[in-house]
Figure (cartoon, rainbow, N blue to C red):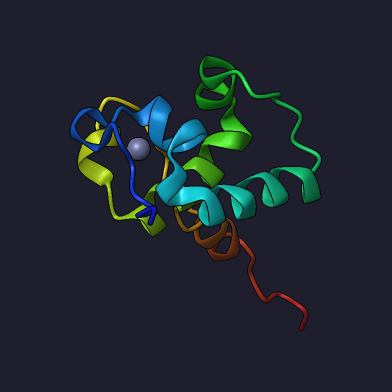
Length: 98
Ligand SMILES: [Zn+2]
């Protein structure tokens, strides 16, 4: 009987986890679907993916779902920050209608 586990789990690298690891097959599928939906064309090259500004946000999501943040510390992942310019812009609008 086969047990579905990752044979190289002792040396999980970000590249392996994102592109190869059988343990994250389902999450990876979602990841590709997100890229596809948003027409982010990065191919399957790891370096291309992690250096693509739009793709990295989906990588961040993927990483979050795997719970393997430690392995991905070497990559700079930008979290979705709240827009900071907007509040400042709204302050500049004065109500001088009357
Ligand atoms: Zn693995």
